[in-house]
Amino acid sequence: GLMGTTLTVSVEAVNRPAALAASEKAIRALEAAEARLSTWRNDTELARLNRTAVGEAVELSQKLSSELAAVRYWWQETRGAFDPGIGTLVEAWGLRRGGSIPTADRLAQARSCSGLAALSLHGRMAVREHPGLIIEEGGFGKGAGLDEAIQALASSQVLSAMIDLGGQVALTGSGQSVALGIADPADRQKSVLTVSIHQGGLATSGNSERGLVIEGQRYSHILDPRTGQPAPDFGTLTVWAPDALAADCLSTGLYVLGP
Image (cartoon, rainbow, N blue to C red):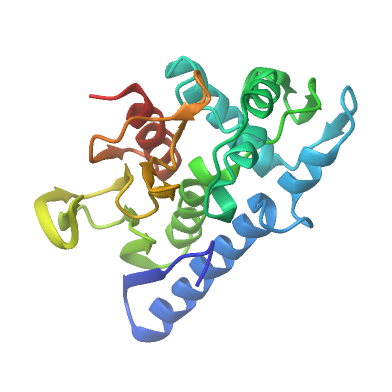
C-alpha cells in the first residue's frame, strides 16, 4: 500500500527485465512523492512547510514548488472551490478521526484563515502568511505522485504503462485506448459506465467511499472551502485531464462546485 491505498502498475516493455526495471522506477517515484507530500507523517517537505513560522521565507525543492504552483493555478481556476490550504478546517471536522461536528466557534476560527491565499509563492520561495494555513495533500497528492511515476516510466524503455493508485489512473505510451469502468456510487462493485482513454489522468471524487456518519447523519468528506461545510452529496464525478495532477485537483474542485 502506498499513500494509504492500493497500487497497481501495468507495464508493457520490450522484455520482462525492462518492464520490471521500469515498474521499480515508477514505485520509487511514488515513494519519493509520498516522502515529499504526506501530511500523515511529520518528516516530509510539505509537513515541514506547514510548520514554518508565519512570515518566514523557506526555499522549496523544485518538485514541491512546481506542484504548489500547479495547485495554485487550479485553486484560481475554480475560484477557490478547490483549496488544499484547509488543513485547519479538516482538523475542525475531525476528517482524519472519523468525523465530528465542530462548534460554531471552532468553525469560525478555522475559517479565519483564507486557505491557499495565505501562501505566498515566488519561484522556489514560500511564505506562510497566516498561522492557520495548513496545506492538505489529500486533494492533489495522488495526482502529483502519478505524474512523477509516469515521468519515470517515460524515461525508461516502456511501450505503454498504466498506474492505478486507489482508483486514480494515469496512462502513458502506445496511444492504444484502454477501457476503464466507472463505479456506481450506490454500489462500488458495479460499473455504471465505461470510458476509453489513451493517455492522461483519470480521477473520481465522491462520497461513496469515505462519506462520514456523525451522530447518525451522513456528511461528505469533501469540504467546501468557501462555506467551511461539507459539499452536498450528488454521487460521484470523474475528470479526465492531460495530467493526473490536474484531474485530481479538478475532480475535487468541480465536485464542490456541484452539477
